[in-house]
Length: 141
Image (cartoon, rainbow, N blue to C red; front, side):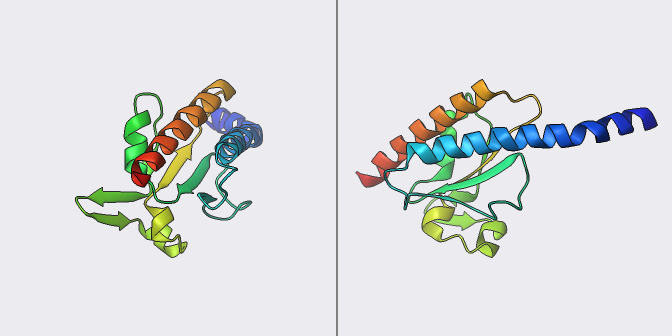
């Protein structure tokens, strides 16, 4: 057990760097999709002091749960706000971070894992961007 712990501990910096590169790729791909309207998307939390594998991203005026429902067949993620009939419940974490309601309801928490590869990140970004665009069109009609 001690040898296994030592091996895992030695591999951690390499894994952490790999996860961070994949998370940053996911973030940049999603930001690029919406660069024409920078007020539509925001990254939540500190840009440097955050988990290497987790991205909290919000899209103004869309419902995160609706986006997730559209991509759940290929992407596992969670929404930062829960919708119940006509009310929206925003997580305590997003409230503490002072994320405005119009963004909080469109928050997605996305994580990469040690078995995630670049192709999967690119596919997830494409699927999520498409679902967000569809949700945005629907909210504007």
